Length: 98
Image 1: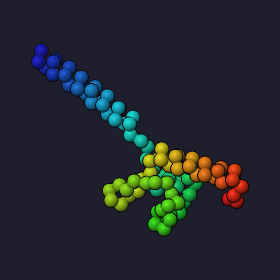
Image 2: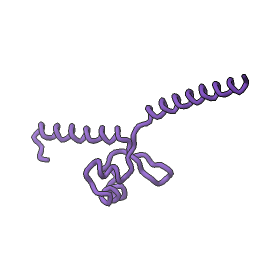
Image 3: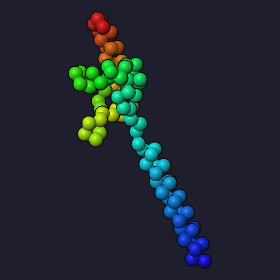
C-alpha cells in the first residue's frame, strides 16, 4: 500500500513539474546569437561581428550573456526592424532622400 501511494505521489509530482516547466518555457522569449542574427538580417557573420565592435549603434539592442557573448531577443529585433521601416516611411513622406 505504501509503495502504491509513493508511486502515485511521484507521478503527481512529475506532472506538476512538467506543467511548471511548460509554463516557464512558454514565457521564455526566443533569442538569436550573432550568427543567427546575421542570417535573420541577411548579413554575414563577419559583418555582424564587425558591427558589434565598430558600429554597435547599427544593430538592434542586445543583451550581454556570460560577460562576453551578445544575444538578441527576437521580439526586440523585430521591433527594431519595424522602427527602421517607420523611420524610412516618415523620411519618404517628408520628401527626404534615402
